[in-house]
Image 1: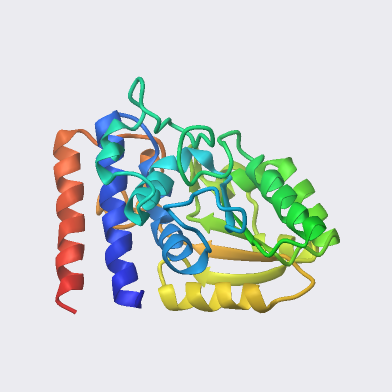
Image 2 (image 1 turned 45 degrees about the vertical axis):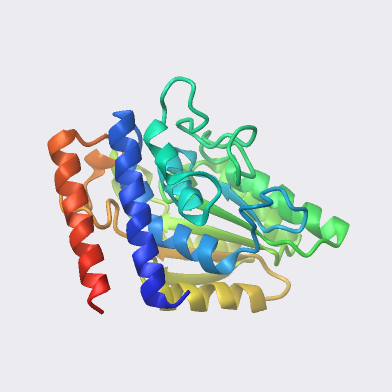
Length: 278
């Protein structure tokens, strides 16, 4: 995909996020929207995956460590063809396979059930180590929240990954600056995030999470880096793309009502129209 197509795809994913959360009347739109461009690049450019064969042995693995932004992952998987886009409207409904957090047993394309914050990166490190031990070629990617990295388990996993030189592992931190209780630096500051990962022997790259040129360069550098895992610190805007949600901690875990849904979709339609004119 060229960069314009990636932008259009990310905008469709954002529509899917808003549609799913509105239909569920609950969920986490803020962090899903901030990570939409990261999801788009991973699933449409970076990772070796096949929607027709979700469990193929040599596929790249992805672990959503911040499992509450499942709407973002689901909207991406749907756009990529793992299941029908229409199913997004069943998010969190009784009987739906699209639960509030990723479920490996029932959702095609999900490599790890997640949701307990801090634990996903440990699973991803285990997958990366397994590939090394088995001489397998697949790479492992994991997405963490910047509030999530206040969890101690994250740094145990990082220490192990650095010590074992897991250069087939890429840790991405969605650094939108906000968590459920407010600004991350006010709750329990994890800054400087990049220096912390450097201290654990990571190759660290800082990027704008909404710039596909920077994302492309970062993932390319991660592939070329040998002997160290890579951490991509992606500076993002919580609620990106929806005017009234941007940079508002209150939209971490709130669903839009009908009026807000209409406004949000109108915002995203305008973005889509502008992209079509380029």
